[in-house]
Amino acid sequence: MRFVDEFRDAATIRRTCEEIRRLADPARHYRLMEVCGGHTHAIYRFGLRDLLPPNIELIHGPGCPVCVLPMGRIDDGLALADRPDVIFTAFGDMMRVPGAHGTPLEHKARGKDVRIVYSPTDALALAQRHPDRHVLFFAIGFETTAPSTALVLQRARAEGVGNFSVFSNHVTIIPAIRAILDSPDMRIDAFIGPGHVSTVIGCRPYEWIARDEGKPVVISGFEPLDMLQSVVMLLHQLREGRAEVENQYKRVVPWDGNRAALTALAEVFELRPFFEWRGLGFISQSALAVRATYGAWDAERRFEVPGVRVTDPRAAQCGEVLKGVLKPHQCRLFGKECTPERPVGALMVSSEGSCAAYHSYEYRKTVAATPA
Ligand code: SF4
Image 1 (cartoon, rainbow, N blue to C red):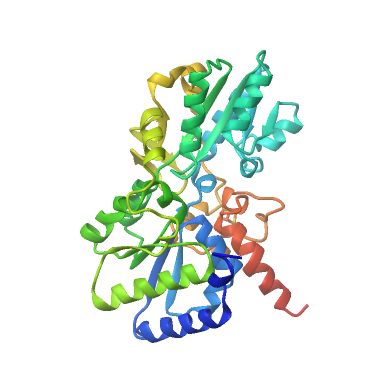
Image 2: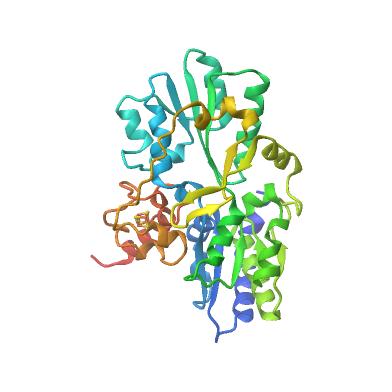
């Protein structure tokens, strides 16, 4: 398959790994953060960690939007689902994410009208089919998914669909990277930049990381050779004392981003002054609110949102894992109280969550290899 088979070719992977071993200084420990949850998943799925020399450490970043959402926002959204006229809609990966009073799926089991949609367009279509109900779309995601929400809001306004609104939890990636770099317990040498987000925002928004912080960034694709080539590119920069933004994922990511998507985002959304991130706290200008011009379709303006703040269960260490301070298996609850079947934190639910990825690929491998 084009763009898949050639990026999984065993001989090329072997050669690339030899190049990595040749480039990596054995006297040095490298800490490379993959920002995107899709990359974390690829690392465990393809066993890439096992292919790298032990002095190259991959740190999992905060790029899983479901994982960084604090429990209070889930409770806020579900409080709106309690209204008898509301149909609450969300993507499937939200359904098992726990709030303080249960998951959306558990609310459904209690009789609330909670439904999975595959896109915001489906939610809008549902509103058009049910003019007597109000359809609320629980919007989540980085700049990758925010344009589709923006386009649907434009359509709702153009078509005058009054029984539809969006509860926006869209977040932006650059302030999260800034928060990580400002965090005193983080020591990152370089970044594997997020491929999906960058298809929308392009490469320019990362330039300050190289220029002001002196950290190399390589925007990467998601196949094994994409990621290994990105490591090669980062090692070249570190060896040569360079700090630049490079684009490994040129077949998908335009340097200047997607103009049409950025225009739609700018028309529909504005930056919130502050937004709470799980594990990272309040980060200024890090999330998108619906602009007043689209206020009729903004759930936070139409309804009274309780503004719940909930702390994670005390033993859960989601924050430390999200910041890359702990590896998933180092959390006290990992594989015991917290499993994919009975998740305590969102990182164990989302397919992009590092705990779920580690549990699916690494942990089961370790358990299978342990003699009974
Ligand atoms: S194992 Fe569970 S509680 Fe611990 S960090 Fe992962 S998701 Fe959070």
